[in-house]
Amino acid sequence: MLNINQRLICFILTLSLLACKKTNLITEDFFVEEKEELSDFELEVSSVSTNFIEISWTNSLSSHFKPITYSIYVNEKKVAEGVKSNKYSLIKLRAEEEYKIKVIALVTDNLKIEKEILAKTLPEKVQTNDGKLYQEYNIHSYSRIGGPIGFIKSNDGGHIFVRHLIHTNDYQNDGFKLLVFRIDKDGNFLWYRIISAIDHGITDNTRNNILLNHNETEAMVFAGSYIFRLNTFTGELITKINLPDLTNHKINTVYHISNQEILLGTNRGLLLSINPETLNANWKQENSENGSIVTIQIDSKKIFMQYFNMVICKTRFFSTIIKVHLSEI
Image (tube, rainbow, N blue to C red; front, side, top):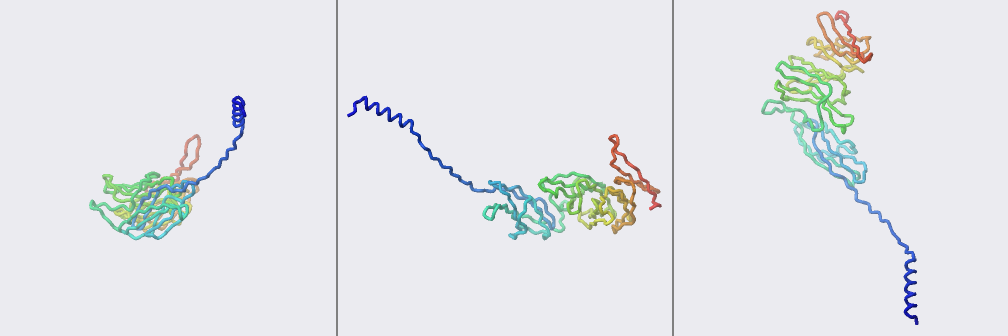
């Protein structure tokens, strides 16, 4: 039988062995995948007309950073899918009719989020109690007015302006539209008309020109190679034409001679005379000088065309004045 000292020695040895013994720890990694979710987004009507509704929305984001596309429904009928932008235009609609519009953001059919909104197109002809015509579009909050300016004063003291309605970068290639609007002598809006720029080849550096015709009942807007004729009382688009003589040209300046003749000067030195009634060409004059016709002035004998040649010399721009006798054309 062990005495007390022997027991104490055995106890100490046992503790020492336990302290030196290695313990194998087994750990396991568990991967728990979080459920993918889509963030909420906002949907709004950005503009309307008698046959057109434009909608826009904010981005929805995937918690797994997956790409999201959008599907568009009108009155529960799918009209578009795979949309990647944040804007969509619904066209060929009926006037004064309410539509239920739904936008669905989705990664897969099982992971989606949707928003609905009601929008109503404008009546064909509406006049408010204060006598002002109802505007064709509601200019939305994502836009600002800028770009080249064209304007003309009417006999009643008001003005008609041509500007650019510029959108945010979210609108990609359709970054702006042509905005024509009329104000009275007190600065009150009477009407405004929006014209697509991308559909008519109008760029952000295109000059905007405007003239009044038919005893000021008609406004003629010149942009790019197009002429737009608008009713000055309502803003209604009467007609438009892409002038065939202006292929690869853009209108820089215009000059009203009479009810039978308007002169157009282009960015490539072409002087074109048109009939404002038929919009047909009377004659045209090609010029050997390089540059753009930026102004046209006329007296009883001569037409003066001023060229801006864009030639830089000693940090100055040079201009050339070309005189053409009416009898020579």
